[in-house]
Length: 400
Ligand SMILES: C[S@@+](CC[C@H](N)C(=O)[O-])C[C@H]1O[C@@H](n2cnc3c(N)ncnc32)[C@H](O)[C@@H]1O
Image (cartoon, rainbow, N blue to C red; front, side, top):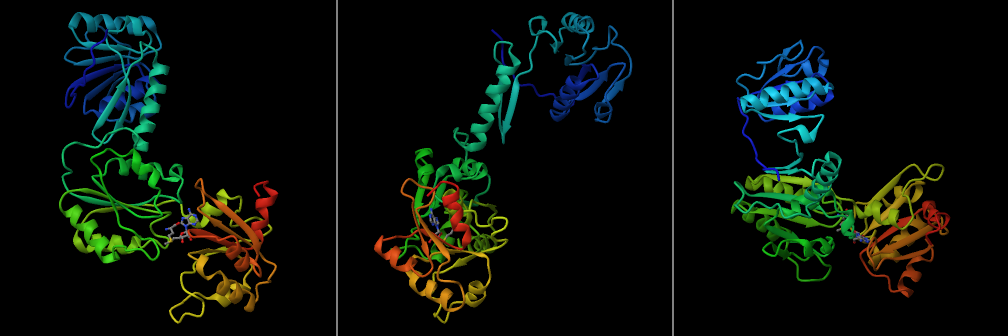
C-alpha cells in the first residue's frame, strides 16, 4: 500500500530528466509548487526550455541528482529512466518513473484543485482510471454537489447575485451551483429554482424574501439591507433569483446596494426565461428566413398606463419576435394594442407557463384570440408570451 503525502517544494531543488511532453507537464507542476527546477535532456521542447527552469542540454550523468529533493525520470528511454531511479534510490531521493509504475518509488496522482481543496487520486497504478475519477470529482466540485464549504468563517463577507435559470435545476450554471454550495445564507424567491435548495447542507440558512404577486413580500430596500448586513457580518450571502438577475430581476439595484455598503459582490448570469422558456417549448426566438430580431418586453403595465415607457407602436409594426414577460394579466389590452397598431390579428402567439418545469403548459393561438383562449384555459403566471411567426417552428419540430 502506498503512503499519500503532500509536499512543500517551495525553493527546493527538483530535477526532471527528459525534454518531451511528459517532462514539460512535470516541470510545470513543480514550478507551480515553487520548486527550483533543473531539466536534463539532449533535446528539450522549446516550450519547456522557455519556462523558468535551468536546462542542461545533455544526457543524464550519475551525480546529476545531487542536492535535489525530488526527481522525475521522464525520458522515452527505459535505460535512462532506470539509471535516474537507481541514483535516486542510492541517494534516498524520491523518484517518479514515468515509464514504469512498478519500478517506481513514487507515483504522480491525478490532481484537481478547487480553491484551497486539493484532491489527488491514484488507482492501483492505472493512470487512466485515476484521471477519469479525478475528472468526475472535478465536475462534482465545480457543480457544487460535494460539501466543500470551508468550516471556518469567510475572511470577509460577500454577496453573489446568482441567476438560477427558469426553473429546471439543471439550467442553473455550474458557477452558480458552486457558489450556492459555499453559501452561509441564501435569499430566494418564488421564481428561483427551489429544487436545488434541498441539496444544500442543513446548516445553510434559507430566507424566502417573497416576490410573489399580491403576497406579503419584503420590499426591495429590506432585501438590499438584508443582503448587505449579512455580508458585513462576515457571511457568504447568495441572492438566488429566477432567470438572469439583470433581466427584469432588479439585480442592478442589489449590486448598487452592495457598492454603497462597501460589500464585495459577484454577478453570476443566469439562463433567462425570455429565451430559454420558448426554446424548451420548441420556439427559437430568431430563425433564418423568418426573423432576424426579437424584443424582450416587460408587460407588467397596461399599454395605456401613463407610466408605461414601452414603444408598442414600434413593436407592433416591426417584423421581429416579441417576447413578453409578466403579461398574463394584460393579454387582452396588449393583443388589442398590437393589432390596433398594425400587427396582423392572425399572427401566431404562444403562452408558455411554468416553462422548463414538470407543470409546463403551452397554449398556441393567434393575436386576435389569445386573450379569450388564455382565459378559457385559466392560464396562470409565470408565463412567457411569444408573438411572431417563429411560433410555427414548434409544430415543425414535432413538439406540439
Ligand atoms: C420579474 S420577471 C423575472 C425574469 C427573470 N429575471 C428572467 O431572466 O427570466 C418574472 C417573469 O419571468 C417570466 N418567467 C420566469 N420564469 C418563468 C417560467 N419558468 N416559465 C414561464 N415564465 C417565466 C414570467 O413572465 C414572469 O412573470
